[in-house]
Length: 179
Image (tube, rainbow, N blue to C red; front, top):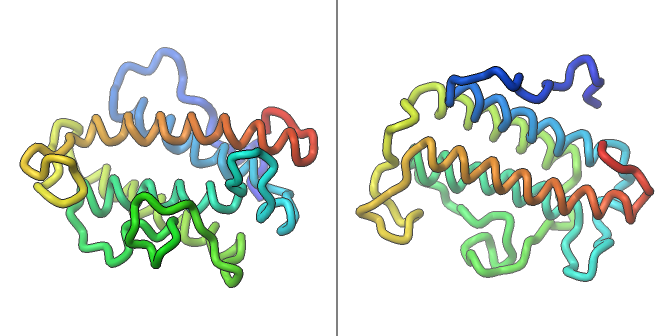
């Protein structure tokens, strides 16, 4: 469990360095994800409180794979066997619904998330914001890959959007707001 004293604070409003701002907010949102899931029993993690049918555990796994797809597979050009591992159909179908196996526990997914975040931090630390990803199948036009600064901004909007979804789900599950 992350205690408030350990939780990263929102980056200060006087920050002007784009790298510090982007990475600071990314860590802030990563921590918010863990806080919002903290204390939910397994039944609630695996239940869909909203009509769209996703579960908090599926969303958690999805955000892990979002980082894998954009930073490891996309930007770093790593060979990822199952880049869509958060989806059904063996993790190879990008259009499949989010999926968590019965044998996947919150603790296992949390360990994978933390490991993924650490790997993402190392990738970002080793590159300039203006650097482009190598051409790869990750991008619609493999000859025009994304820049690191664009990828980081995209990750921030993914986290912000999904954390809003999780806020609504958590309120429906147990009434907690703004964790």
